[in-house]
Image (cartoon, rainbow, N blue to C red; front, side, top):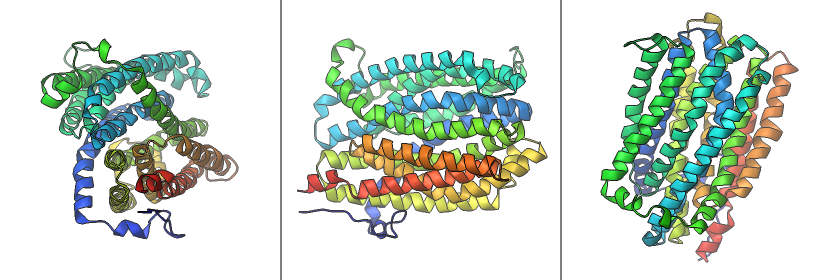
Length: 465
């Protein structure tokens, strides 16, 4: 059998072969993706409710949270990228029938997550003395510092939780991550209510209280997942405390890092471009920065659907790759791509028809609302390319391909997207809108390059021979 996937000239974003999907493939992809989407959505909803509650404190507090979050997110996503490789490799071991390797791989992976979490927490704290270089408004920087300190510490439990979740996802045990994620939304709102507004005897801490809420919620999530690992029959076997150190294997750590580190840099290049854009917008004005946060927060919420499909694609393609079944890899890829396009149609329509109503949830400042409504219309158009590039990246992780995609993402965001955004923002009258048009250019380039990379991938042909 000689399998060679093709990309037609007009099929970079929508390959006609996507339509050649069996209902069973769509059902399998959706069944796997929905709990991942819901779990991811719960993480994003924590941030949404954070920002809604912070927005009640005023545009200045919202802008301070934006600045702190834009810096914090870069080390965070690097750590998340490392752990994202775990589900792919677990799926490959299972597809190849190598279940005997799973316990040692899981132990080695969690150890890697603990060490990387400590290192990245140190990186975040090391950035703190230099926050005043990121914004000219020193009053805003002073407001952001205590909040930044707390979310910097929270990176450690966040990465431990994600490592535990990725291992469970790779085993296709999805409900614990979903239910813990949903519970964490209520916990975060409760902690915010206590410490932001001084309820139940807690001090009234304003923006700093939101940082306390985030830290406590993330610690609670780890504790809950450890309890699940203690009582779930399969997960209990996957990670055992007894003889933990003796199960660590250097070869598994190296294999994880070979896939995880480039994946981490992919997220860094993407998140770094958005963070860099936030810093640029901070030089335009604090209202523009607050509006940018609102629109980006809403766009990030819909992006969680793409992340869920990407995670499902990683697991399904990884399982088929481990079993050396290229026909199944192609079908799974087409299924998640088609689902991504269909879901983003709905998301785009929501942004177009409710672009004025949704910002009202965040802030009462009319000027901020108007700017955010404009940005949401731009976001409606990049939903498709954002979804396709995210899913294509997940499919490539399923093939253990991360190095070349990392370079492609670097070019898309830092050679194409960010320079175009800067030029339009500061050398035309577009201002903050120009930055967002740069997002459209960067995401379109990323979607094109990663999709072509997957459908012409040599590993698909090699496994077919």
